[in-house]
Length: 403
Image (tube, rainbow, N blue to C red; front, side, top):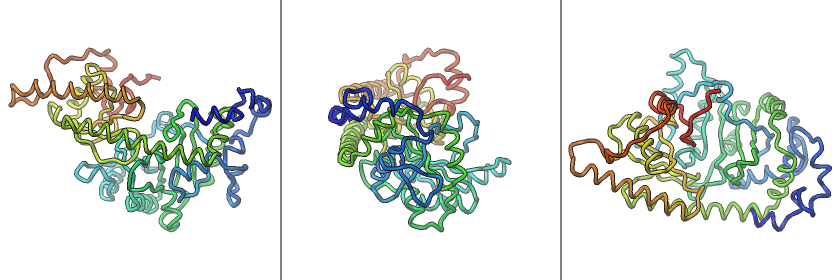
């Protein structure tokens, strides 16, 4: 990306080559985004504009099989503001944490029996934290279930451009295009962002794509409270409108992710840490079950505290993702350079060997790490992690804001 910017200085209004467009870009613009930042679909009255960039990039990231037409929206974390209750659908390691129709129906019945009105299903594909892609069968099951129960299906496809190995990625939009009768289109919604695929979370660009006119109309009104700056739109429109660049960028991204994934998981395997087989995302789903004192969420949180404070690694416990099996952790491997990755692996190896050494003289005890490892945390963090481990941020060990 840096190379592209150096070769295309006119894409920014803060350069000599692009300064002539400053007045036009810095002035008031359409609240729904610059025309070059959206894509026109003639038969959809609720989408208008001209040209290409980001929609073409979304299509390319999905393998070019599913046509994407969208409108900007930014705040994807709707639950933080509305207080929506999330009910997890149980997934299990024995079938690689795949969503099954039986577990989906069980979660729905449990909510209904508890007098909870279910409004929709929320999934991530590729999965965060698993780093796996959903197959057609699973997506068809989800779409069909949503249609039968008349609830919405919201698909977060923010990692769709990070698929680095087979099987190929399948978007829910592709499922609907292949068989429009499988689900009422008004019930299907896709959210996306450039934060992961392009690696620019600081640009704050979020997208919602919906087949439902009412949802798009609502998103259009809400977008006025969180607009992307026109300078950012101009730069991205120019960059993503360059087909040669986006083709090379996605190919290079996948090559680097595959290399890093193989190196990181191989390093973990060297000390007996097993990871779920994955093919996408910026992280791996690793099992630290042998290091738990016992198979409980409390033991998982206790181990997590030691790793954060003593080992100095910021990984995320499975309980923060509603994982029902204690001992699974998400470890990010893409947001660091090679030296940092090697440092992380060295710390993990040292910790595991130390834990094994501490456990060896006492084979009957369940404790697996050195008794001298202790953690001193602020009282507020103690309360959050001990009493409500599922409220922890899946991205950071920092305390959530009280307001």
